[in-house]
Image (cartoon, rainbow, N blue to C red):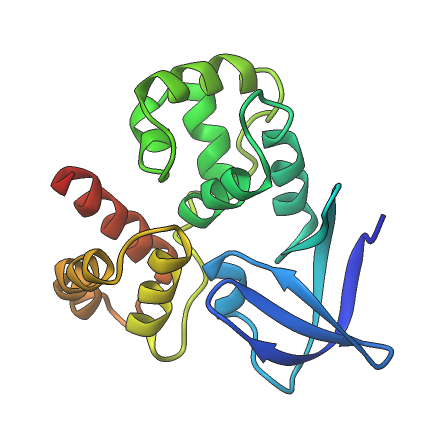
Length: 201
């Protein structure tokens, strides 16, 4: 089990980062919020979870141990694989997911691509005693220093939306981003963008 990776960031892609560890570049799948805190050439330390399949080894990376723990707990629910668990964490922080499960908030779960009404009800039932209570104040995602449009667009493409849909969603949340004081929060914008896409479908 690889518990974490630590080293300089060698490359960034819309859904992954390459971290150099002892001369080897490890590809790590990450959520947009985690990626927004990384910079090429700078050192980072990511909590990781290794998913082993017959035909692949995939390393998933997280900003902290709490996010990794929730990622692993989500997969104990039937029908939730690593990709869906990561999509859930791309839309919601660990605490937001705990709150959604604790309060039986179906709407929050159906905001995640790939989860319908029935799936949300099933997940709420299965995860009720597994995730635990929320630990802190509501979070709205990591601040992004530049290029929130590109990051948001890449995140939507990474979640399986078509380029046209991603373009429309970015345009729809632009007024919200411009109205935000200071730096727009990609996590909050992603949530708003997904809501506009769900309404459009």
